[in-house]
Length: 397
Ligand SMILES: *Cc1c(COP(=O)(O)O)cnc(C)c1O
Image 1 (cartoon, protein in one colour):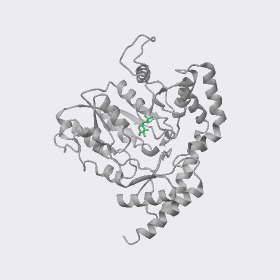
Image 2: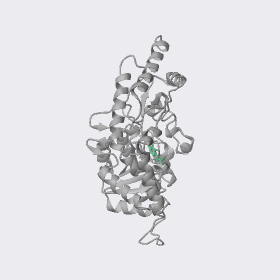
Image 3: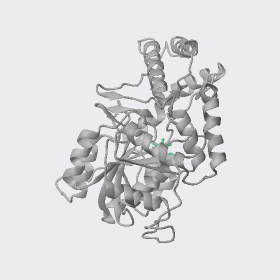
Image 4: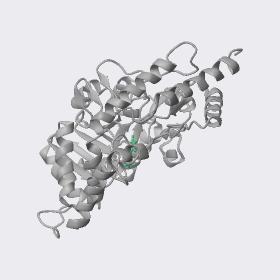
């Protein structure tokens, strides 16, 4: 059994991929070939945004969005500690300070109420507690500029309150949709839920290339123009005019060709993922289950990048993962260590206990195999193994 089965997917569209790649070999425009523009147009339409700008990875998409907002030293940007390092990394790479906020225990996404208290703290309101903003950060008096919310495991963050707070405080909001391409929030598509949406086409993401790839989405003409320029070394009207310092952040044509071929399957794959998640819920959602299944609140549609469950504690998680491994069933932990406790961010001054929900989830969470081609009998076997352990080993606890 595989955790993510890219081979099963390739089997279905191998001819299409080869045709697309052969076309690139024939025209030879490996950088900014016609497939890049075609992909941008298709995905802007898919996500219902005015602009889509292809770029080299999800991480670069975040970096480019922050650069387009002029983020640099002296700035602070709010983000979640319970995710992949990329959003906090992009903030820090530009010399700005990532300010962490705890997550909601049900959705694992950034908690709007906690964002509100951080905004108050930054507004200099001395009647409120400083909250978990370390004194090391407060002493630097950074200017709060924006928020990066992450759509973890494929489910959008709760954008309505986040956008309202941001508008009031004059902050921008970036949607890290690296895991959520194809998902929806009250009828609106991921990547269109904030001022700028950033996604990744890393091979294991819901829509994956055969290498690194990403995209920025926005309705703002001005922001789109800045992101596009920054992704080509800050290029101006022509190739050797530079209007700002940018990066080499383009998407290469081969990856665009692969993505166009895979896009044909994508809507159907979203439905399949939905069915697989539903079947897991059915198998593991009762009292005899040793794990808590994910909850998708009303109004949300997840792209199910991961199916992540919570065990009772860290010891139980190790036992469950160990038994599954013995049976040849792969699992993974997203994420074993919250970002505020990573050595990379040690100098920000955060400590254990600052974000109890993130810390507890990091100890208890693990992900089961999830991809559109997972077989029912495999899911049944996973549930049987989990429930057998739960009845034997945890019965006396
Ligand atoms: C994968 C991921 C990224 C980074 O994407 P890359 O294409 O690997 O650079 C950013 N944020 C989140 C939440 C991710 O899961």
